[in-house]
Image 1: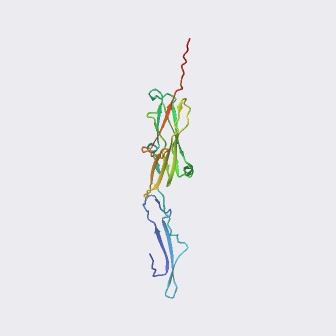
Image 2: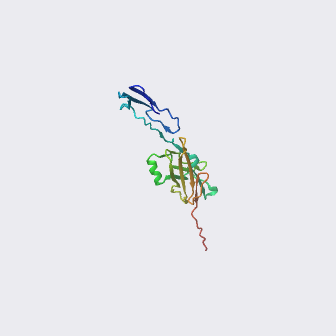
Image 3: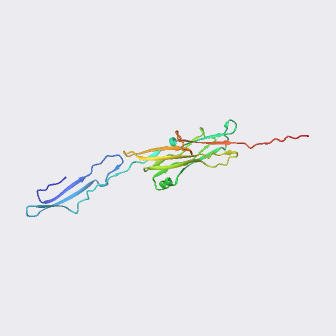
Length: 219
């Protein structure tokens, strides 16, 4: 509002921005400002009030930015292995399968810019795993956006084993909840765009022994 002066002189005012207390809002780093006003009698029945150069700028800058959020690997980035072909679908020591979580090109750029931070992007399921499941690491998300990943099985070298060519896509969406937090959701889909409701990428490998020929001899 306006200030009315009735007497010439120098006046000093303190202007303070109160803490906002709003989630996600960073208040101005200089919440207290000084305003100096010089009031001069013009000797003609009027006075002139001037804000002096020593006064602080009274523009306060506040910034809203939601806090980082996390996509749980244990909940949204799971892998399961089916391995068939041997008697009773038995696993042997040395059986091991590795899976990778790979960002697409746009997401990789956002990683390099610090928008998101990845946990473990490679997991292994082997003979000793019980159950035959694993989960990639959590993803820390610092900015609103959409992030896309693929989950695949790495090529292996187990003899007579057909490796899975399945590819799963995970689309992660981070939106501003408006309360200082990010709302993070993910959708996992198969190659045919079918949604995987339990967020588990299932890979099936098959062991097939070489054929053998018995030759009969006649006399």
